[in-house]
Amino acid sequence: MRRRVLNVAFGLAVAIGAIVALAIFGTIVLLTTGTVRTYSAVSASMTPALECAEPAPGCESDTSDRFAVSTRFGSHDRGDIVVFQTPPPAETKCGTNGRFVQRVVGLPGETLEIRVRGGLAYVHADGVELDEPYLEPDRRGSGPAETFRVPQGSLFLMGDNRDRSCDSRVVGPVPQENVVGEVVLTYWPPGRISFR
Image (cartoon, rainbow, N blue to C red; front, side, top):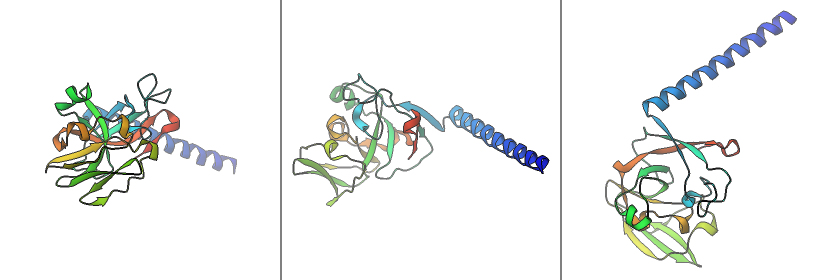
């Protein structure tokens, strides 16, 4: 009986070892082929979905979230968090350029309206108020009321921390070709691990 238990335990250990080895190998392949890229949250624009570390302005954490981005998604849905190359107006209007991470709020061809109610800003797409469960009330922002048209081939991107986000409200819709990929996993720190 004891020998049978040892055989089962050994077989289980081998199986777990093989799974771990395959996972490590798969991760290495994905990273080296560019299918998955890793980034770190550097601003407070996506708080609390992606936390950045103090002392950067608006950051509330001791450690910046690190996250993995899949570059193989062809289209993006409302609510997806994406990394993108900023359009040219970002350098002058936001004081920076490079790669930003924000959420898809408006889709190609839509008319977006920001309406202020009770001192808070709510986004409407083609007249229908968006359900944005990822927004905390104190991060919704206060406006101003504005209307935007999203051209075909573009996305309207906004941060979850609206008062601290330099996004499509400032730089305009972002061409879909500027999107690097979609955030699929927060992997660091351990207490923040989550799939998207």
